[in-house]
Amino acid sequence: VRAHSLPCDLLQRSESTTLVARAAALAGAPPDIVVHVAGMAPSSKTTDAADEDWDRTLELNATSAFVLARAALPHMVSQEWGRIVVVASTASRVGYAYTAAYTASKHAALGLVRALAVEVARYGVTVNAACPGFAETAILTEAIQNIVQRTGASEEEARRRLAGYSPQQRFIQPEEIARV
Image 1: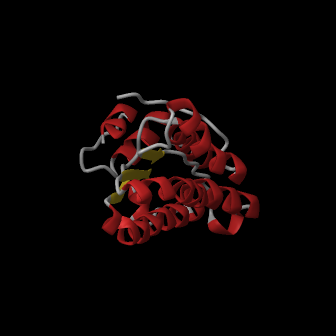
Image 2: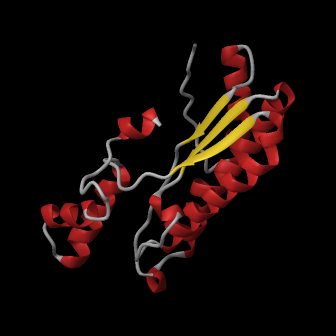
Image 3: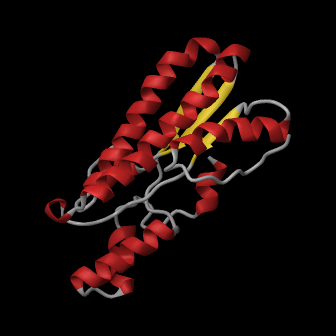
C-alpha cells in the first residue's frame, strides 16, 4: 500500500480540483481514499466578526471538502469502491460561543458527509466524518492565545477550560485523529 501526502491551497478551488489529478499522476491511478483534513477557526463575538473571516472559514472547512469529494467521486463510483473521510469537529454537532463561522462551517461539513453518504452508498463508496474535540494543533494554540488576550486568564487556565469540554478532560493528539 502506498500513501502520499499532497499539500495544496484548498482555498483555491482550482487547486482542490487538480489535487485528484496530481494524485492520479503520482500513483498511476486516481485515489481510492481521500481525507479532507483542513480547517481554520477564527474566534470573536459574532457582532465583531469580519465578513472575510466568515467567507474564508466556510470556504476552507466546508466548500473545499465538497470540491475535493466532487473531484474524487467519479472514479470511486465507476470502480464501485472508495472512501472519503472529512475531519470535522465536535462543533459539527453542537455550538460553541465565539465561533459562529467555525461552528456553521463544521455543521455544513457534517451535512455534506451525510448527504454524500446516502448518495453514493449503493456504489460501494463510504463517506464518513471524524468529529474530534480540541486537538493539540495550531487551531488550539490560537484559541488559547485568544482566551488569554481577551479574558486575562493564564495560559494554564485557558488550557484547563478548553480541556474541560472533553469527556476525557484532555486534548486529543493529532496521531489519535490520524488513526481514525
